[in-house]
Length: 84
Ligand SMILES: [Zn+2]
Image: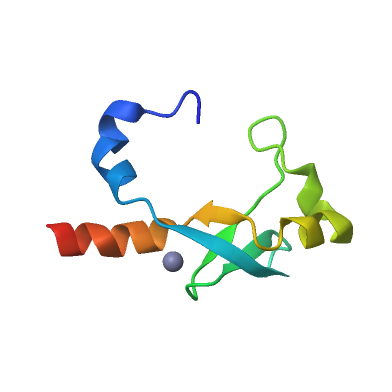
């Protein structure tokens, strides 16, 4: 990812956990949330120009992204605990 703050995140990156998407749902304010295979979930907001995820607003787009791997920050955090 270009522009990420590499310095601060270097250690986290070593233990990055990528979890495939198994489905999607919408939260109480109708933001899209990806359900990950590990049981966690992650927002996949479409907020151009910062987060450009046009695909998430269409059923076809979400279907195509099923199985796509997202960095699961909750698994990352759990792995951090183990390492520390
Ligand atoms: Zn997870």
